[in-house]
Image 1 (cartoon, rainbow, N blue to C red):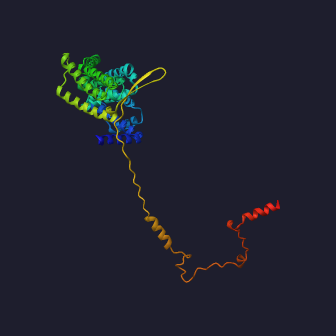
Image 2: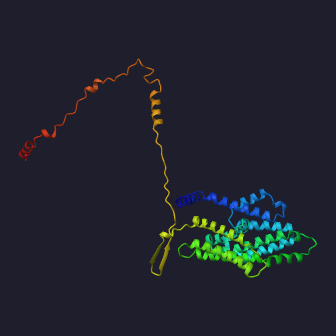
Image 3: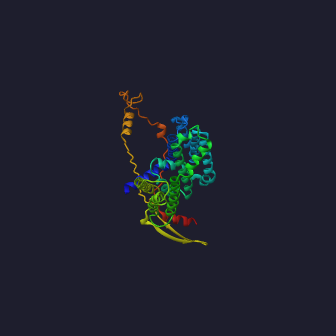
Length: 372
């Protein structure tokens, strides 16, 4: 445990030191994976299936706010839909505008959850997103999470019905009817929307409580609630949606374990040293529970080597260096002694002052009294 705490402390120090470089790299990687996922699941416009174009767009997103990759993703989705048909592009545009007007404009900075949602399905860990959003973000993240689920299922629907929608003999009204039915009557999508929204709200509610181990309890509760909602929606309500139970359980357990790792690095409270504080001011009484963070004091040792050998060698070199003034080249010459000038010897010496012990103070006192 101590080694893990030291690793956590080092990671936090590195992140705090290089935050201005790490954040753009993380946004670049997220945008790159998201745009590649859009091209892989749609890919109707061949010109957009270019790695260099995706790299340029991801690089632009790395210097912009996090919500910018959602809007650039909307543009890619619309262009791919236009390649499939103008009716599909119009329907997709109306769907995106409805999301932005009625839902996404309220969530603000939480809209990056919209990007994570389809990627959680792509990596077969859908339960990780609502649990992680409930832990790390506010309850408003339920809005972009639900919209992300709708977009993910609708893109899958377009992929499965693309051969029918590109049929030129099919009327425009028939295409619109097929897409409307695929959106409204997709019960598996609506069950997932309910599960995501409910789990985010539940995890966030429990995580913000003051009892011990609230984060871990919220993670386990969120995993159980996700499995329960998915199973009840599939089997208990007799809807036209089926969920494989074993893969659902395995993926949810993996998501819970990853969420516990996230809790260790993001929170890591030491409840054994928790304290309850009470204080008041002129208007209020305050009851506070303080939970210290689990951390280990890492001592940084700096060893400074002091080597005096180079200095000694430099001094030797200076002593042995040969110059014209050096006696090495003038061995026969003896150093001349300066002769004292006779005028200096004739200078009168200053009279020496008598020592204090040779003065007769009584006699001096008597003489001064006689004078008076």
